[in-house]
Length: 76
Image (cartoon, rainbow, N blue to C red):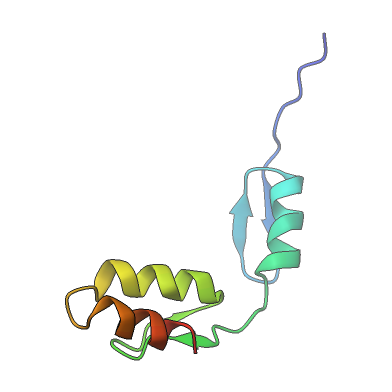
């Protein structure tokens, strides 16, 4: 039986450690170097992914607007 041990991997571009080489590879293809282009119009917090912005708005700003207004603003 072969036991595989995770060896931490380091991203030289953003200076972060990852659990293993596979996690680092996923980070490089999905996140590393991407601009945070999705900005919350309520608090100006920015996100790399639109889905994360939508989740943020629903969790942090739910009481500020009606549900339909929130969804309309998040889908822009």
